[in-house]
Amino acid sequence: MFEKRFVVLTLSLSITLLLLSLGWWWLVFGNVVENGYITTAQAATCLAAETDLCRLAQALCSNEHFFEIRWYAPETLWASAALLLVALAQTSFRPNTP
Image (tube, rainbow, N blue to C red):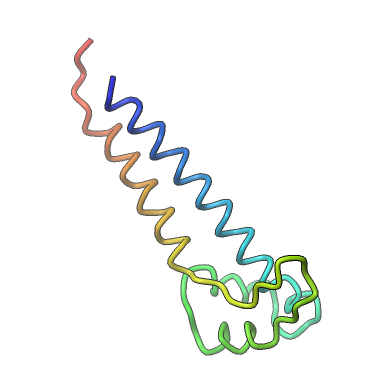
């Protein structure tokens, strides 16, 4: 019973963190892409890594959105992926007892 709750909780947390990470990423890089400074493909690399291009794009981000966030941390995407792997591993290695 505890294992099932743990899997559901971990999976829910993973999906929530993934959606928050994607929203946060788009909030920062959406304006930069819409203004034509970088392409969507170039901005997509910033989801998982912090490169010089990502730092430049973050510097070009304006405060034209509600939250005034100008930076993104790719660690949130990695944390959500790690939680997803924990949930999947928990379901894969569970004993088949009734």
